[in-house]
Length: 239
Image 1: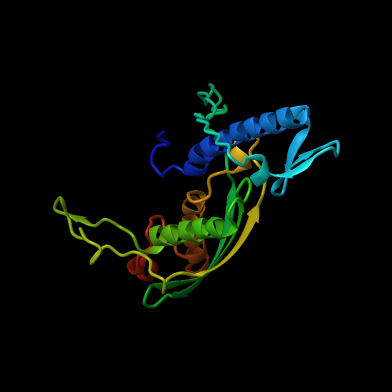
Image 2 (image 1 turned 90 degrees about the vertical axis):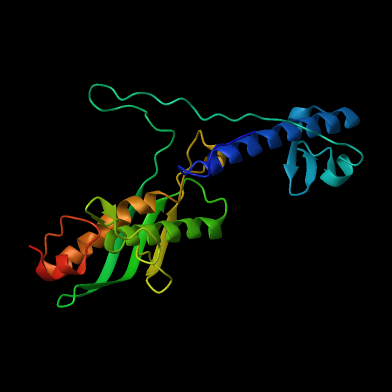
């Protein structure tokens, strides 16, 4: 089936939910088969490592042996829960799951030239449950890189109704040389209705790291900096 685009921090939830549901159905059929073969109640069976075990101690058999010559095919269609409209007070369960993140940015600023170097970004992020630590860290670091670009580089320049920087030759993006040191703390607060408790990871950093960087530049320079990206002229000549 289709889980939609790989966007909106939804793939682990949608594709992962379908995989998780299908695996649970296969496990039920496995337990039913093993229980029938051994005269046991399938509700007493569990998986321990690579073995099917009877929780009362009457059986332990490798999954490979229990499934030899067998094939289980299952299909599972996963849907997230329905959301609700906000009430007259702006309150309501309007999102599938909420994630929380905080950022602290450390910057070096040359006030005469208006140049900014983001030295370090520290973050604490609610990730629900970490399913793949390396991939989760990559999502956080990638989101921070995008937020950095929005803070000090990325801008569509229009003049006389025409885009003046229509290609990546002129549209600035962060490179590895611009990437700051990232200190990431992943906080696990599993979402009860999510597959394995996971939450979206990649997008929250894009939201708060940009204002964190701008706030750090503001603190370093005393400038108001009411816009993003912060340009050199904003630092040198801004209010």
